Structure formats: structure tokens, C-alpha cells
Length: 314
Image (cartoon, rainbow, N blue to C red; front, side):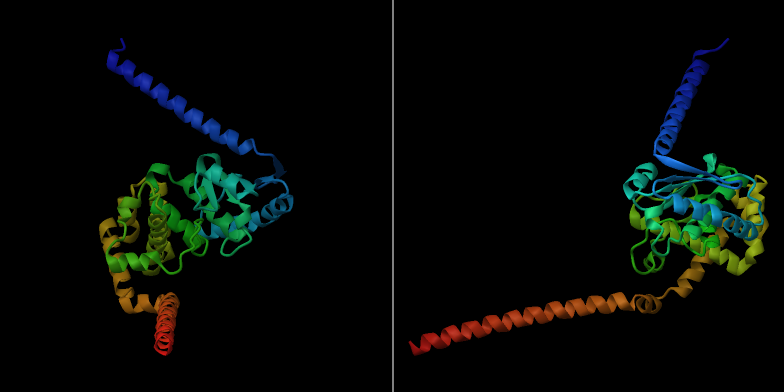
């Protein structure tokens, strides 16, 4: 016999299931309600908004090479056929993604990659690099359960295989990470396990930290080290266990060593050198303002002198 508590839990489960289905179907409707063309290929399905037929053909042609590169990097096969959706309009992409800070994103459960093609003609967002980055997300989630894959590791690996490129619009000059290390205001890696911050600067910092930590692991423990961590995660280990087994170091000790490495590398001198252009530009602007104020003061003094001189001869 079902008691009241069990009945209440069943109701909550059904309500949650309905909400999940509603939002999932709403998202699918938003994507496929677009007026898209379809390009069927053996390895990839490309959806595109008109007039992006040529871009879709370009994606279909480059996909096999991108897939092979990624398989070589991670030593895992891409055994699924992804769908790539090319969006021509920035506003449409922002509506789908819910963010104005990114140019592409992956939906692992649907094996879907959505790309804002309007941003693909400007560096560093080359279409092949962006495609590889997002395909990496799909491949990682295909082999590793979502609950076992930390967000920092997911984003860090994707940046590593794509040459350090993130899907994030980063217009600021210089490193946010350097400034955070100098000020002691970095984000704990454990805080980046499930989600990234929403505020722009903190989001950029999260991406930079993820990339930096993966690069540190590869540099200190080799490419095989990071691949071993991924293999243990694939086998179902928690991230603490995977790091300990793959790198022979604890999760917390790894973070401490990484931070110590950054602190040694990042001094006020190196920070000033790396931001020399911005500093010189700022100083030049200050000097220009000071010069302008001096000119105004001289003009005013000269005008007052002339007025006094004219009064003397009246």
C-alpha cells in the first residue's frame, strides 16, 4: 500500500519529469523551427540557415579531418554522427544559447553543436577550430558520465585540443588569471566542478583557470597523464580517485602545486611587462589630459592678464 509520503514523492517526480520534457521540447522547437536547410553526410548532419549552404558544405568537407585530429589527441573514437547547426544571425544565436558571451556550444545529450557563424570570420574563431572544440565536448560526454566529468576538466580539455581557444568572447586585453593570482582572488578549482560563474570577468577567469590547469598537468605529467585521468573517469571513478590513480597525486595537492607554479611565474614585474602597452597608453592619456588642463590654465591666465592690462590703459 502506498503511503502519503510515497505518493507525495511520486507527484514531485511526475511534476519534475513534465517540466524537464517541457523545457526540452521547447528547446528542440526553437532549434528546428528555424528555416534551415539540411546537408546529409555519412559522418555528420549539417543544418544551416539560408544563405549558409556554402558554409555547411565547408563544414561537411572539413569534419572528417577534424574528427581524426580529435581522435588522435584523445585516443578515443567518435562512434556517433553529430549534428552541426549553423546560425547566421547573432540575435538568433543569443536567443538559443541564452548568453551573449559565447560563439558556440554543445548539447551532449543530443549530439548537437550550435555555432554562431557570424563570428566565424574573425580570429580566433576559425570554423574548424570551433568545430573541434565543440566536438571534443561531445566526445568527452559520450565516454564519461556527466556526473563524473568536472566542468573545469571538460572546458580545459576542449581548450587544450583546440590550441587554447575557448568558445567565449574575450575582448579584454591581458590575462584575468594573472591579475587574480597577484591579488589572491582566484577561484578554487573545486568551485568549478558543476558550473561556471555567470558574471563576465569571473566567467573568463574560470575558462583561463581550466585551460591553465590542464596545460600544467600535461607539462608536469605528460600527455599520457591527462589521458589516464580521462580513462579512469570513463571507468566510473570520481575525479579525486582518477587524479590520484592517473597522476599519483591528490586533487588538493595538485591544485596547490599548480597555484604555486602560477605564483612563481606571475610577479608584478612580469605583469607590468605583459601589460606594458596598456600601461603606456594609460600614461599617454593621463599626460594628454594634464597638458590640456595646463593649456586651459595658461589661456585663462593670459585672458585675465589682457583684461587687467586693458583696464590699466582706460
